Length: 145
Image (tube, rainbow, N blue to C red; front, top):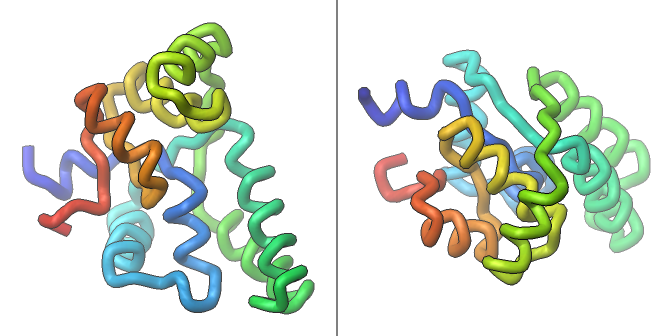
């Protein structure tokens, strides 16, 4: 399996999605993942809390004058144009993993979905990246991207 084929399904963390729309957050790695999602029609999975994390981060960015209120709504609309599949994660598994990895239960949901589906995690969140690496979950962005 090639690196691109391994990315056809991935769990998308809010940190990567926000890098696609927030001013000053765009990195070459984030844009590469966005382009893979758009060009290759990657199936992006996320826990239901994803959208609340996104909306909250956009609200905070608006409050801090990083973008206007209209800009926050436009950014949310742009992200909703991506085809993302909301996946439930077993709360007991999330609690166990959160305890094991010293993460918030909501963050552990991304890991539970990655483990259950045996798919990579797309994240810039260092806590998630570290925990995912310890659990044997492939994390992107990585050097090969």
